[in-house]
Image 1 (cartoon, rainbow, N blue to C red):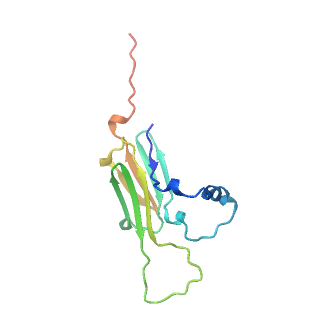
Image 2: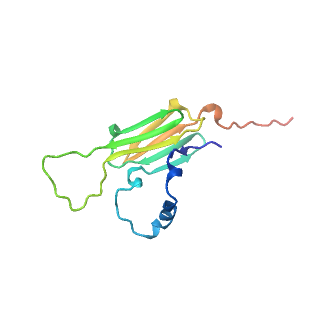
Image 3: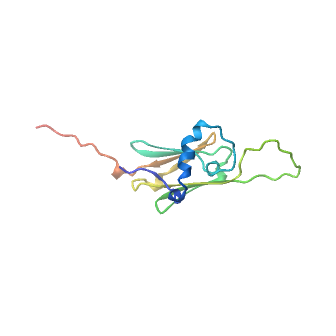
Length: 146
């Protein structure tokens, strides 16, 4: 079975300590500080009979700030959000919104039809539909009784 695989080139280089941090994280309140996870859009990847679907949370982004590319069997999703500078200075008491570049890469199965990929944005969620090629879909063969 082929499936979409998240491209994580540095996964093996992370310290073993992160395994324990990630295990206990749900039990403790976190402070919102600049971490690796704050710069990675959250995604869901699902599969149907005829297609794969990738949904990515990109709140506050416009379609013009998001870029999708397919290259060498990879789907690359990137979005860049820059902070607008204003003449009037504000004094912030709390500032949690982040600005920067977000990137995710997925290795695509060979059965994705690159020509028919569709992407739509609605309420801050990007939905990318990756149709499967016709020839790779399972074909049911009826058996005739004589």
